[in-house]
Length: 309
Image (cartoon, rainbow, N blue to C red; front, top):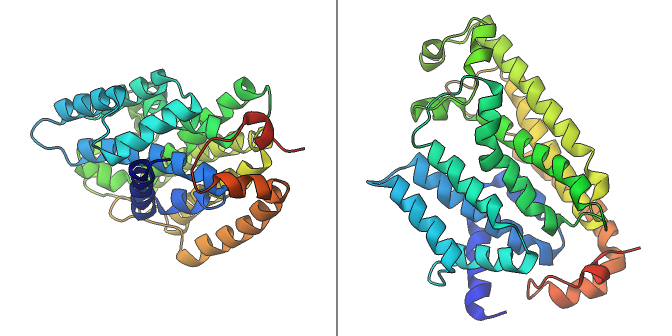
């Protein structure tokens, strides 16, 4: 690996560490050679999020340019360099990235969604494809990639719905609401009420409904852990626990997320990480010598040699 490529992946790791606390913590449970591509995919999503959340003069044009430069292999940009290497190295479908950028553009023109089906249409590109992008890196067991794909989709959907609930106040400040209007109508809640930060029992019932929906997605995603290589399982398991912990914190805060942002405490995150690290170390022991040879280069190892007995 060249020095420039090593530096590019290091920049992605810094972006993940700075902005994705729960996500980054979970990646530490992966073998060292699997972490850089995960960091790269996270960094691309973060760069695109920043374009739409903090738009400049021409955010649509900026997104178009980002997508074009990724396709062209712009070696001047660290994030794009690392992502392009990840795409090529792990043979990730370009369609997943095209769908991602399509959903990012929706954030520039769509401020509400009528139905859950409409929300899922947006989340396909903004979340489900992220799960599918990471799937080759997490290594489904031989012959099980297609079986694992639906679980990877639900992993991305569950994570994003959890983020929607945690960040609902911030999204309203940006003029967006991701909870479907049909759900607001079901519980007698108006968008204006949410914008006024008027928390009452109707809003609590709405948020509880969405929390249970998110838990259902996370529970389904958890069923797919057994389909992954043992060295990836504790990363996904810990990420699920951390995101489930965010839902627990919302309930613990009596659903007060309209005017504040809840988070899982540092102590709880550390406990989950330490527990996961022990299991992850045991899972990768049979592959220790092989991984030691590749972790410094971030090379994708031979598929047969990375699948242990």
